[in-house]
Amino acid sequence: MALTMFALSSLLLTLSLGALPETQPTTAQVRETVQRSIPFIEEKGLWWIEEKKCVTCHRVGNMIWSLQAAKQSGFTVSERLAEWRQWSIDKSLANNDKGKITGLGNKEGVVQILLSLDQADNNPEQKEARHKLAAILLEEQRPDGSWKAGGQLPFQKRPAAETDAVSTMWLTLALLVEGKNEASTPAITRAMKYIEASSPGKSVEWYAVRLLLAVQTGDSDVRDQLVKQLRSQQHADGGWGWMITDDSDALGTGLALYALVSAGVDRIDPAIKGAQQFLVSTQRDDGAWPVRGTKEKRKASVQETAVYWGTTWAVIGLVESLPE
Image 1 (cartoon, rainbow, N blue to C red):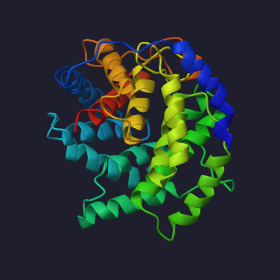
Image 2: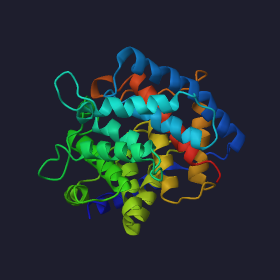
Image 3: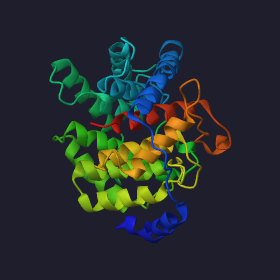
């Protein structure tokens, strides 16, 4: 399969990385780091809701997912979280000023909302909301099984084909988590054929979401290979860059941390503890992490959107990697 193309390069990278940090954060330090970030996530996310009234800007979905994950692990979050989550659902399902369903322009954000929802919640209204959100994801699939990345994602500093592949993997993952049905099964089948034929990416996100898909589909061979490859991409400081060749940042590290734990890597594994240490030691005083832009034209400097994405993913990764 296409993944084997990177086997040798992954081995060489592993040999060049050196040892991971010996310092390991305590559980208390990790929890303090997460709690410190929550006000930043809430304040900046709420601004997009109240001032921009925008659910298609790849912000609110990250906000809802990270805060919901934190709440489920016992962290203190705003009592308005349920209100914000419902706003994001209603806004995604409503028509925009052009008469189209708003969520069609931000399927990746719809994915984040879906993955934040409790699949075991049998409340009829919540089940209906999940069904309608999943239906949005089925729209506009291309004949080859892929979906075009939404919004400004095609302008990212990785090949456009990879960005489309990553979006396709996220959409497929959400559809699988929601559960196959008569409408989604053909779309998932087409998407998986496209994904399996796709070339390995240049971003850590490609490997992270591909690993999450392998876990969801029960493909243990692909899962094990991707775990090895993600391990090989980890830097000596314990982190990952969003692009494999980037310096470590919270965006790449949070994604990799979440994917590895989801794949069953032990929470006391050196790779997990190294990632936690990187995030604990690099957090800013305001609770966020500095992340350079993901767009090609803004990749040289720290950018607000990348900071927000990185901070929400750092929280998701740290929360999911806490001791059970």
